[in-house]
Length: 162
Image 1 (cartoon, one colour):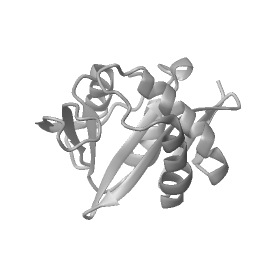
Image 2 (cartoon, one colour):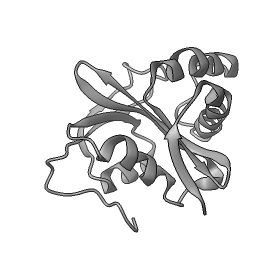
Image 3 (cartoon, helix red, strand yellow):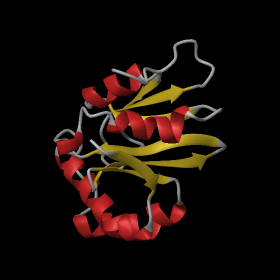
Image 4 (cartoon, one colour):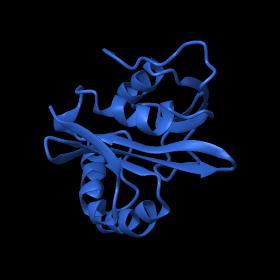
Protein backbone atom coordinates (compact mmCIF):
# COMPACT_ATOMS: atom_id res chain seq x y z
CA UNK A 1 0.00 0.00 0.00
CA UNK A 2 1.28 3.42 -0.94
CA UNK A 3 -0.15 6.11 1.32
CA UNK A 4 0.56 9.81 1.21
CA UNK A 5 -1.04 12.74 2.97
CA UNK A 6 -1.07 16.23 1.53
CA UNK A 7 -2.90 19.52 1.82
CA UNK A 8 -6.09 19.46 -0.24
CA UNK A 9 -6.27 21.77 -3.25
CA UNK A 10 -9.22 23.39 -4.99
CA UNK A 11 -9.12 20.72 -7.71
CA UNK A 12 -9.80 18.05 -5.04
CA UNK A 13 -13.16 19.52 -3.98
CA UNK A 14 -15.35 17.25 -6.10
CA UNK A 15 -13.59 14.03 -5.11
CA UNK A 16 -13.60 14.97 -1.42
CA UNK A 17 -17.30 15.83 -1.57
CA UNK A 18 -17.96 12.38 -3.06
CA UNK A 19 -16.03 10.67 -0.23
CA UNK A 20 -18.05 12.68 2.29
CA UNK A 21 -21.39 11.90 0.62
CA UNK A 22 -20.62 8.19 0.34
CA UNK A 23 -19.61 8.00 4.01
CA UNK A 24 -22.59 10.00 5.21
CA UNK A 25 -24.99 7.79 3.23
CA UNK A 26 -23.74 4.90 5.37
CA UNK A 27 -25.10 6.65 8.48
CA UNK A 28 -28.84 5.93 8.62
CA UNK A 29 -29.00 7.50 12.09
CA UNK A 30 -27.90 10.92 10.73
CA UNK A 31 -29.61 11.85 7.46
CA UNK A 32 -27.88 14.40 5.28
CA UNK A 33 -29.08 17.93 5.92
CA UNK A 34 -28.16 19.12 2.40
CA UNK A 35 -28.41 17.75 -1.12
CA UNK A 36 -25.46 16.67 -3.26
CA UNK A 37 -25.19 19.97 -5.14
CA UNK A 38 -25.09 21.97 -1.90
CA UNK A 39 -22.41 19.66 -0.46
CA UNK A 40 -20.27 20.02 -3.58
CA UNK A 41 -20.68 23.80 -3.44
CA UNK A 42 -19.74 23.86 0.26
CA UNK A 43 -16.54 21.90 -0.40
CA UNK A 44 -15.56 24.10 -3.35
CA UNK A 45 -16.60 27.48 -1.98
CA UNK A 46 -16.24 27.23 1.80
CA UNK A 47 -14.36 24.23 3.20
CA UNK A 48 -11.34 24.12 0.90
CA UNK A 49 -10.84 27.90 0.64
CA UNK A 50 -10.87 28.11 4.45
CA UNK A 51 -7.81 25.82 4.60
CA UNK A 52 -6.98 23.15 7.13
CA UNK A 53 -8.04 20.27 4.85
CA UNK A 54 -5.74 17.30 4.38
CA UNK A 55 -6.33 14.32 2.16
CA UNK A 56 -4.98 10.81 2.11
CA UNK A 57 -4.09 9.23 -1.21
CA UNK A 58 -3.78 5.47 -1.35
CA UNK A 59 -2.49 3.74 -4.44
CA UNK A 60 -3.18 6.86 -6.51
CA UNK A 61 -6.75 7.52 -5.37
CA UNK A 62 -8.28 9.66 -2.65
CA UNK A 63 -8.97 7.43 0.32
CA UNK A 64 -10.08 9.96 2.92
CA UNK A 65 -9.68 13.42 4.36
CA UNK A 66 -9.62 15.45 7.53
CA UNK A 67 -10.51 19.10 8.08
CA UNK A 68 -9.61 21.28 11.05
CA UNK A 69 -10.54 24.80 12.03
CA UNK A 70 -10.01 27.23 14.85
CA UNK A 71 -13.03 28.41 16.78
CA UNK A 72 -12.85 30.57 19.87
CA UNK A 73 -9.11 29.95 20.10
CA UNK A 74 -9.45 26.16 20.07
CA UNK A 75 -8.50 23.59 17.42
CA UNK A 76 -11.47 21.57 16.16
CA UNK A 77 -11.42 18.42 14.05
CA UNK A 78 -14.47 19.19 11.95
CA UNK A 79 -14.34 16.29 9.51
CA UNK A 80 -12.56 12.94 9.28
CA UNK A 81 -13.85 10.49 6.70
CA UNK A 82 -12.29 7.40 5.14
CA UNK A 83 -13.89 5.76 2.13
CA UNK A 84 -15.37 2.28 2.60
CA UNK A 85 -12.78 0.51 0.47
CA UNK A 86 -9.92 2.02 2.48
CA UNK A 87 -10.97 1.43 6.09
CA UNK A 88 -8.92 -0.57 8.57
CA UNK A 89 -5.73 0.24 6.68
CA UNK A 90 -4.38 2.93 9.02
CA UNK A 91 -5.62 5.86 6.94
CA UNK A 92 -7.77 7.42 9.65
CA UNK A 93 -4.91 7.05 12.10
CA UNK A 94 -2.46 8.66 9.64
CA UNK A 95 -4.80 11.60 9.04
CA UNK A 96 -5.42 12.04 12.76
CA UNK A 97 -1.70 11.97 13.46
CA UNK A 98 -0.99 14.57 10.78
CA UNK A 99 -3.67 17.08 11.73
CA UNK A 100 -4.14 16.61 15.49
CA UNK A 101 -1.66 14.44 17.33
CA UNK A 102 1.35 16.57 16.39
CA UNK A 103 -0.28 19.59 17.99
CA UNK A 104 0.88 21.18 21.21
CA UNK A 105 -2.64 22.26 22.11
CA UNK A 106 -5.95 20.59 22.78
CA UNK A 107 -8.32 19.52 20.03
CA UNK A 108 -12.07 19.01 20.24
CA UNK A 109 -14.56 17.27 18.00
CA UNK A 110 -18.19 16.28 17.81
CA UNK A 111 -19.33 12.84 16.69
CA UNK A 112 -22.81 11.37 16.45
CA UNK A 113 -23.56 9.28 19.53
CA UNK A 114 -24.79 6.44 17.32
CA UNK A 115 -21.46 6.28 15.46
CA UNK A 116 -19.96 3.64 17.72
CA UNK A 117 -17.06 2.89 15.37
CA UNK A 118 -15.91 6.50 15.28
CA UNK A 119 -16.28 6.83 19.03
CA UNK A 120 -14.11 3.73 19.58
CA UNK A 121 -11.55 5.11 17.11
CA UNK A 122 -11.25 8.47 18.85
CA UNK A 123 -11.17 6.93 22.32
CA UNK A 124 -8.40 4.53 21.21
CA UNK A 125 -6.41 7.57 20.11
CA UNK A 126 -6.62 9.38 23.42
CA UNK A 127 -9.77 11.48 23.04
CA UNK A 128 -11.87 11.77 26.19
CA UNK A 129 -15.63 12.22 26.28
CA UNK A 130 -16.57 15.63 27.67
CA UNK A 131 -20.34 15.66 27.22
CA UNK A 132 -23.33 14.24 25.40
CA UNK A 133 -25.70 16.50 23.48
CA UNK A 134 -29.28 16.13 22.32
CA UNK A 135 -28.50 17.17 18.73
CA UNK A 136 -30.17 20.56 18.89
CA UNK A 137 -26.87 22.23 17.95
CA UNK A 138 -26.18 20.24 14.75
CA UNK A 139 -27.87 20.41 11.37
CA UNK A 140 -28.97 16.78 11.47
CA UNK A 141 -30.64 17.16 14.88
CA UNK A 142 -29.03 13.89 15.98
CA UNK A 143 -27.62 13.27 19.45
CA UNK A 144 -23.89 13.94 19.51
CA UNK A 145 -20.88 13.58 21.76
CA UNK A 146 -18.17 16.15 22.45
CA UNK A 147 -14.62 14.78 22.77
CA UNK A 148 -11.30 16.38 23.57
CA UNK A 149 -7.68 15.37 23.13
CA UNK A 150 -4.89 17.14 24.99
CA UNK A 151 -1.18 16.68 24.39
CA UNK A 152 -0.52 16.50 28.13
CA UNK A 153 -2.83 13.55 28.75
CA UNK A 154 -1.11 10.73 30.55
CA UNK A 155 -2.55 8.14 28.21
CA UNK A 156 -0.78 8.61 24.91
CA UNK A 157 -2.72 7.78 21.76
CA UNK A 158 -2.23 4.48 20.04
CA UNK A 159 -0.21 5.24 16.92
CA UNK A 160 0.69 1.72 15.84
CA UNK A 161 -1.23 -1.51 15.54
CA UNK A 162 -4.54 -0.26 16.86
